[in-house]
Length: 80
Image 1 (cartoon, rainbow, N blue to C red):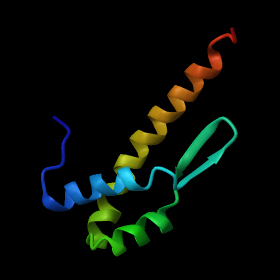
Image 2: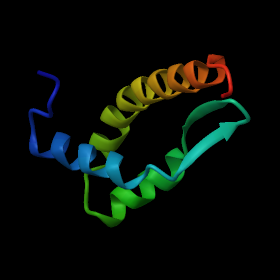
Image 3: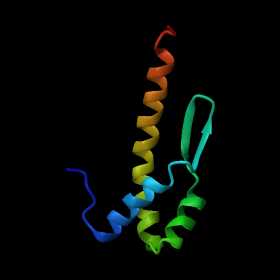
């Protein structure tokens, strides 16, 4: 359903798996990826910069929402 449709899309999706540790966060919330690091890694991998700039922010928005939902769920659960 929501899978990349182009070669560049697949390259950016691969990049997403590689930048997992490049997050900006505050206690209790993830703010997003370090886009400078993401762009540089994409450049090093030979991914067209325009593809990274177009596709990564859309993926980042979903990652932020889902990660923060998970954080909120975990914080709401009572400690055993």
